[in-house]
Length: 233
Image 1 (cartoon, rainbow, N blue to C red):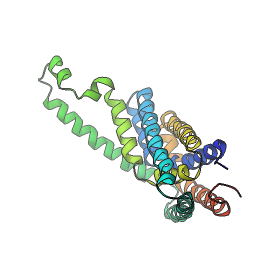
Image 2 (image 1 turned 45 degrees about the horizontal axis):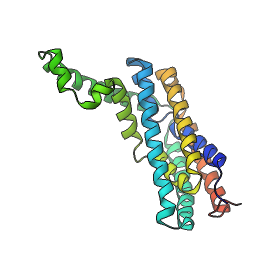
Image 3 (image 1 turned 90 degrees about the vertical axis):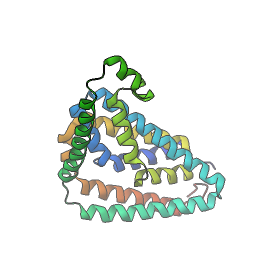
Image 4 (image 1 turned 90 degrees about the horizontal axis):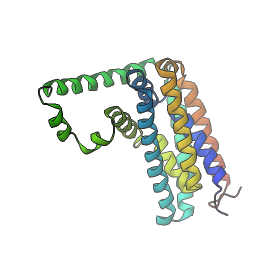
């Protein structure tokens, strides 16, 4: 019996939402939305999330074709339990306040902004036509705000727990359902960050989110353990 679309969608939706709410990229989207046009920030962050979800799900879809489904199922089950324990441990290290992370992210963005302003001031003597010709190809297609939001989100998500979990989930569930669930969750979280801004990000309890994420990973791990490689309980 092949994994169902609905199962992959719901698991991916819940896992991604709890992984992304209040995390570093959530804070980045909130702060960028306060400094730049919200539509461009939202478009850049969502586009990056879609690309990342597609890449992760594709890797998970390929995995059972490279190794047996039994082994990929075992690895996925183990990852769920490992991430559950890690999330539980991290949640107890948090003091429930995300102000420190917000300040750290804001400081990094300020530093990058100063560097960019310094470079632009050095080139202010060039005329507009010369600048247009010297612009990179992507800068001609997309706005600097879109590219900044896209790149920060993409590299911030690369290699983190949610990406690895998405790969494992796509290897064990319906890849299309995983993609749809991940994209919807990312879009909802990013929209909340952009509309809510820094005030919303500061109110989110990282400890509570961590505990919920840990519980979800452990539940998924138990479900995967009790079910076989074909997904039958």
